[in-house]
Image (cartoon, rainbow, N blue to C red; front, side, top):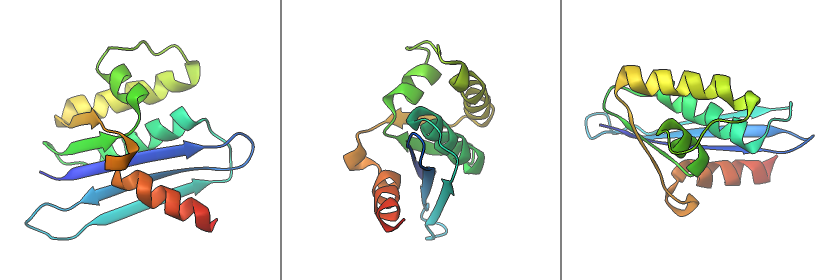
Length: 126
């Protein structure tokens, strides 16, 4: 089982980015880092979902995703409704992937989200 950390950041009118950090399992010993920057503005919640979806696409059955987005986790668990039209398609895609692969996911604060740490450092360089 691997742990996959995801984080997204959106800025109105400037640029947006997401980050996925995969902490290797013992068998490979190789960590992976994926960062994508968009020149198109997206909301912070859209970026959180896009990061989560990328992490889920890269995940193997039984992997665990950690995100600092309480909204994404609570929507996927059915605790919050998805009211925003721009998030509905992303929610459906994320829900489908985690259900089909049996991926576990949970919310942790930014202090425990390695992807957030990498994303923050990257954005300072831009």
